Length: 503
Ligand code: ZN
Image (cartoon, rainbow, N blue to C red; front, side, top):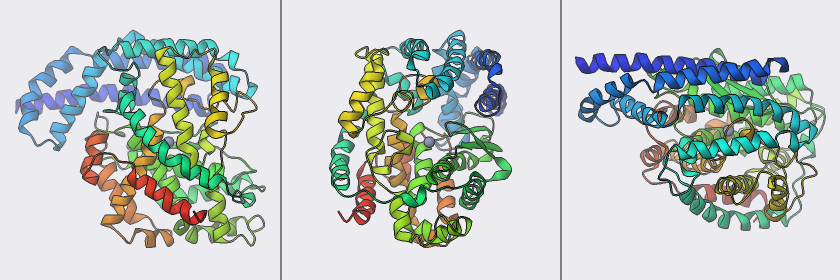
């Protein structure tokens, strides 16, 4: 009896925290979509206030007492029961929050909002000096944040842990080194050939028709528009205010068909994860995504493994051609499939193909570690960026806009733990898809008919519904029976690109 009463009280207190955080997310979404620039200073302050109040409510000693009182009950329940999981995850969040002073979190949020605003002006102006003081402060705040968690091996570890619980700088370095050793020969074999012809994507594609087609495809995937919407932002993202309101944003280029479409497929993958959470988790710590890596595995699965597959386009190319009869006249499935999977050494991470993408991530991870260690300064970052791109990707950025200013992450958040999730997600996308195929070998045939129910339902059951109940390492073990491995991902790349480039 007492246990249920305590649990109800805990849920009510944490529900308020969740309400405040979700209200803050609405302000963030508005800032990124429709807010006039004059709103920026007040918005930064408002978001900081909400974050501070949420943090104060989360570190309420009452929550600590309830968690203590509930410990025996938790231990008496099965590990994967909703009650035991709720208490376990709430305790993890609570203990982490206790270490961060609310005033610090407020400062971090306000700084993030100001810094984001400065970045939106600095990037188009190609003026790194406009954001340099902001970024220096971000680095300082990121270090302070890590230092609230003493006893780390590497200063980035606590920050990586926020995003990808259970990972450390050292374990990621090992995994990435292994991946790099496998990727570099594939990149070399492909880029020594003539590049694929993607001119069919680079014609004039009017915005309205692109938006219609992009929305149709994600609707067919299973993205629920009654619980979501699509808006435009310079940097596409997903955000959720409840399981009943999970939004995505996208961007359009009228001279490139790939931009809006694949942004949509990517963000819809993120959104379907959160729309698919068990509805019983609404407003509590079990809702959301379990880690940056698992979240990204869902976006990359729908964007790449599905959305850039030949089977998918067997169904959708005729539909796209009906939308753009002039532009895509006479374009064969082979030509189109090769165009959307063109591999090349390029400047922009978000535009990079599947094969070279992880090389972009590795550059950023290394910079985060070096900046936090103090072996690289913000002042030297733009130059270091150019040098590293020449060395790793063989390309020279004509500007900082396409260099150090290209990603929003450091300008709206922290330095540390911001990028490894992308590559972990790529690795896991192949891992999870493999398991879905083992359970349902008919998935590729469904896909050729433009249907995705079997795959979507498998993901819902195994990944979306449990939400934060299992940590990423637990989830991977439950779903695959093993720890994280890069083998299925390497195999996926070798098979797909082996066929495309006759390797
Ligand atoms: Zn993503």
